[in-house]
Image (cartoon, rainbow, N blue to C red; front, side, top):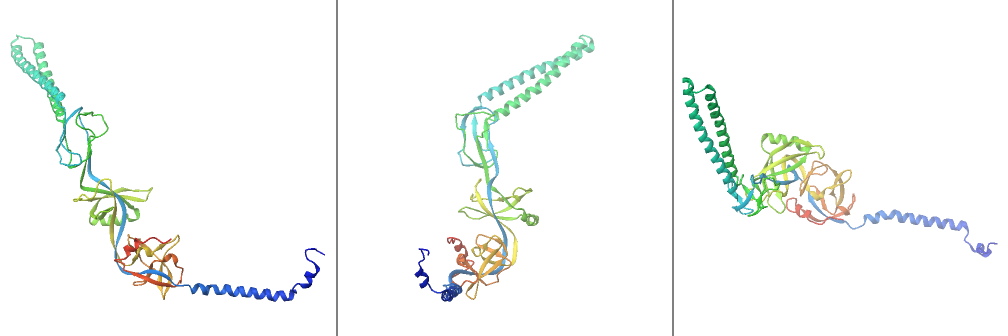
Length: 393
């Protein structure tokens, strides 16, 4: 006999025919409890949600992309001559006019060169006068046989050579005069002067790569940006009729209106975009070169589309959907999203006009879940405020 199971253990065990009905009873009880669990889930309290009405209306078809502000004209001012800066006639950061005096370089070396060139010119002129007289005199004497033909030809050749020297001397005077004029540096364009990189007393060298300063024209300014190539045909069609209007909004600033003035001639195959440039009057100087802005292009109007707050739409891996309210329950709806703005989503199917859709509370919902409406938003006034609410986790 096994010491772990003494003989009296088997005498007092429950018979097998009695144990089997009890086991079946407990299994049936567990099954009934499991079947009752969905009923308990259905009886859970409704989820509170914020909703908004779907609106059917005409919407402008817009693209919002980032852009970079550029000066419409930019010139790096450099010296054309070597010399010491004697005077500075402008203030850094001020508006300058085309032709306005900026700097003055020591002109004394150039004055000396100009004087030398003028003196040489006068010398050659005097020599030419004498050579001309000799040629005329020899011309009369050679006909009477008083001088040889060779003497006359030599005098004529000297006159011709001095005429060439006179032209060279005049060119040297003009060159020295031009070099002297470069001592006064003037603004080549109208615009805003930047930082001066050299100051009074410094020597300027023509071979230096750095500019003295940069002048940027701020009225107007350009903004360069890129849009997906799928919009290229629409942009070209609109641009043929009139310049495509663009709105630029800097961070924390007001909107500025401009128009497209350049469509690049090549699509970037690496990014699938086309480069555009728009001009803005910039009278109030709210746009600054190098600044990043948000650009909005209007490519036409979509008629009778379905519009709802942008937070209503959830974009999944395979499809886009919303939750609509139907008889106090959340109804899962697959929708076709055309595009989104900062505050609104534009659809062409999936929901109906004036139908209630869930704006906040989607993360707590499953299809056919019971809901209670906590708040109803107005698309015009409250949709933007809903964007600022914390995202659900």
